[in-house]
Length: 179
Image (cartoon, rainbow, N blue to C red; front, top):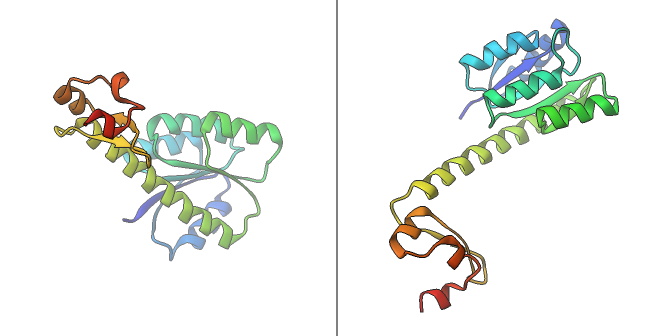
């Protein structure tokens, strides 16, 4: 799967440098020069990783990432900024729910490694979401137990088929319940 990466920075030379750095990597790279432009890109593209500057005119990186989070919740959000005071980092973490904060100037190899990790994180999140949907919507009764055989959760089909409510079985030993 080729991941889609969105680079958002108001400094054109930064965007060009990042595009040049990633030109041989397996990404579909989209760019935007402002938060507003990036929101337009997100409206029509499935973006997996967002790499955004913190200080941009019109809309801060934190504000943009908070809005981006509403549009594409599964995307992995990263701030790449030369402005790294505690308040801006805290704002980015709290509002944009960012994965990483990277300072400019960046180390090319560390940035590339972080992007690989971010794509893996996206894939794990996506797979987890898909498995949750399968679990919740399966027509088959499913229960999840820990290593000791204690039931941790049951799906709706389990409740329908057995008549047990989740409260009755969660925490119970499988061997006691089905003896």
